Image (cartoon, rainbow, N blue to C red; front, top):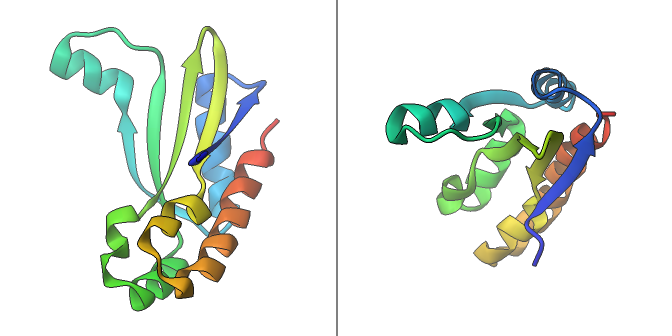
Length: 128
């Protein structure tokens, strides 16, 4: 089961991070968390790692609806979006909410997951 949607982009890592943040904002998402995996790996493990950032994106209206339908859904929030480099190429990936929320087995979440997915994947697809 494919749980992420990935797009290779013709942008530098830094440009991709900035552009996906802008695209998420346009889609109604804010970035609650930003984890610099490269810096963390270096600091905690003294390991050199390629550029990699995890963005915790949240749309407050969607989050409220999800939490109202299922209290434990907070375990799957926020929606993660990653930007990373692999072999000199830059990639942007987003979680696929319809897959992630399907493990909850709450039918009330299905239409919401589809709405969130359309916006998240739209943000990723807006990048060149």
